[in-house]
Length: 196
Image 1 (cartoon, rainbow, N blue to C red):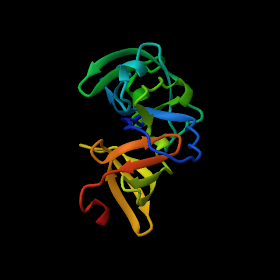
Image 2 (image 1 turned 180 degrees about the horizontal axis):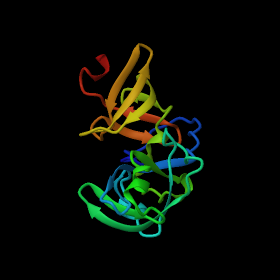
Image 3 (image 1 turned 30 degrees about the horizontal axis):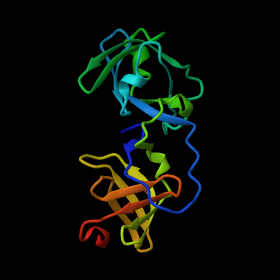
Image 4 (image 1 turned 135 degrees about the horizontal axis):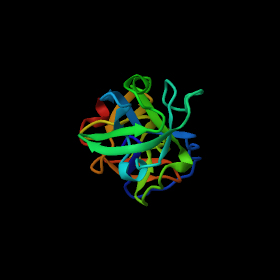
């Protein structure tokens, strides 16, 4: 879910402003060079890699935070792409040697938000959850979403509460509804989850 996309449960009621979308989304990671012809290993960080990574697609190299394009680095255009293990082996126009490819290792690929393929009706970008109120199905206010961590087997919501911070699994079994407009997540926590 690296592009920060996830499925959302059904809605519940109240109204606050949704955060503005980030100007860029991270969609891939280049952990290392591959071979000596300028190719790199590309790990997709999106639920729809086939929609994002294709011949002729253009990406920017993210800055040290991966949030914006690195100033001074030109866009990268996919010249060749083939599946490899959990990702792809990719060749970009103008990157012809291992030394040139190594300059891009451990960097992120970003796309302008408006260039990211649209989500399905039951999906959202994780940035939309930040700042959302969290309450139980009984109406008890729990706190506010501060961060989303992509983990296995379930992504985690860091929720700031009046007494500290708790981690809540972002799964259908716990998060029973998400109201995007009202920015409320309704949870049905298992016994003891909120006591941690």
